[in-house]
Amino acid sequence: MLTGPFAAFSLLLVAAAGPKIVRPQSTLRALSSLGLPGSPAAVRLLGVVEVAVGVGALVTGGRAFAALVAASYLAFAAYVALALVRGGALASCGCFGKPDTPPTRLHLIVNATAAAVAIAVAVNPSTAALAALGTQPLAGLPFLVFVGCCTWFTYLSLSALPALRRPTGATR
Image 1: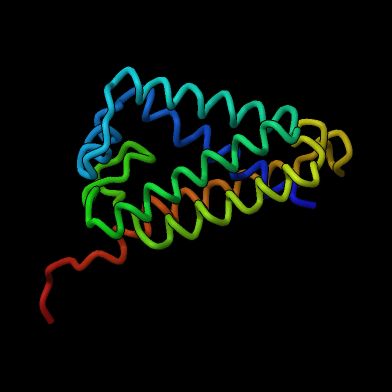
Image 2 (image 1 turned 30 degrees about the horizontal axis):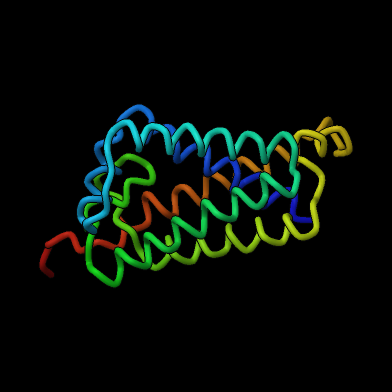
C-alpha cells in the first residue's frame, strides 16, 4: 500500500544526494550557518550514504532500509526545525545544492511525512519498488509514472515553491 510513496521518498533521497557529492559547498554553508561542523569529505560521504540508503530501499524495500530512510528524514526534519528556530541557512538548506532553496515549514512537513511513511514501512514492510513492477499492469509503467511524478512534484515543492513565494520587490 505504501510502496509508491516510499519509493518516491527513497528516490528523492537519492536525488538530494547528488549535489552533496558533486558540489558540497551549499550543504557546508548550510551547516556552518547553524554552527554545525562539516567538511567537504564528510558532506560527500553523507551523499554517498544517502544514495546507498535510497537505492537499497528501492531494491529491497526491507525493514532495515526503511528504518534508515526514516532516520535520514528525521535527521533532515531536525535540521530544518533548527534552521527555522535559529534563523540560519537563509540562502539554502543544502538539500538540492541550489543557493535559492531555503528551508521552509514545507520542508519540515515533507521530511516528517517521509519519515512517517518510512516508519510505517519499517513496521509493516511493503513490496520493494523493483519487485512491485512485476505485479503491476502494463509492465509497471503506471507505477513508474506515479513514483516519478510524486518525486518530481515533491522536489519542485521544495526547490521552486519557496522562490515563487518570495517577494519580488515590485511595487503596485
